[in-house]
Length: 334
Image 1: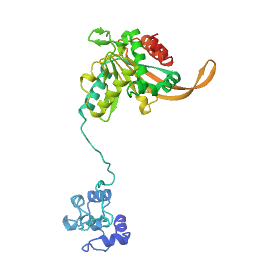
Image 2 (image 1 turned 180 degrees about the horizontal axis):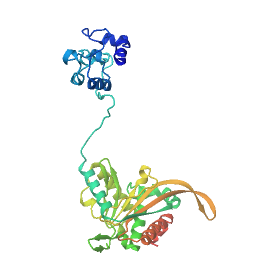
Image 3 (image 1 turned 135 degrees about the vertical axis):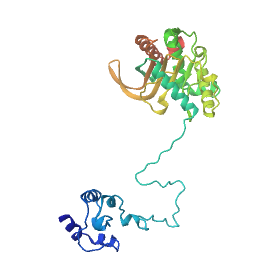
Image 4 (image 1 turned 90 degrees about the horizontal axis):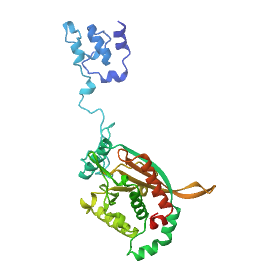
């Protein structure tokens, strides 16, 4: 048969070397059943290397199914590991990973991360969150900060003058004008809070924490900045208490310190709104019919649409924008 002739006449030199000594090298065709030939063809097995167990040396399907190549049963490994010279010891950090596999590391969530995950999931499932955006020209407040930051630090015992103090003061004034933004939902009731407890998001190595400025409406810019600095130090050392991180009525988060240009902050339940600050970038803007370069910041207000209408949310954010662009309005409460 043609198949038998090909098997005998086209065997390469390497195949001849690999064949066991007991296999005859003559070209006599092996007797095999049709099923055995088909299975051998599918598996790429040379019938000349298979010993038949059937009548008269006939190769059966079972012979093909149970056949193993001499190359796979040899005692010598197919690939030998190349040893590293003694002068190049294997670093302890290197892990021997089989080719084609990638390293994965599985670690349990910390209690803080698990708690954060639960709360964020709760927000997406139980609120009708919506976000409105605006931008604020920071040049006046930056000029004010630059002019008085050294004197401010000297008078207030080393307290640094940042932007958060101005935003907290602007937020407390805006919350007085739009009490729904400072409210929360409790079952079928709306709870209007007659005070402004402002949560300020602080990043730590273990995650984001939100200590609360109690009665922020009664605090000066210096008191706000000093308290935030104290919270930051406590957060870094892991010394913030549960009481210091619960009970806020409104939250401010500043992703701009990490370079965020625009984002959608997620509500901090049961609060109804959260203000997101972002990076300050110089951009061309139109002012009095002329194009000027101004340091601009994007603001984002996420709110629970079940409690706060879009009109109130937009007007609240505009009120903060106007006070930041005209810092005197914060002092005059107008």
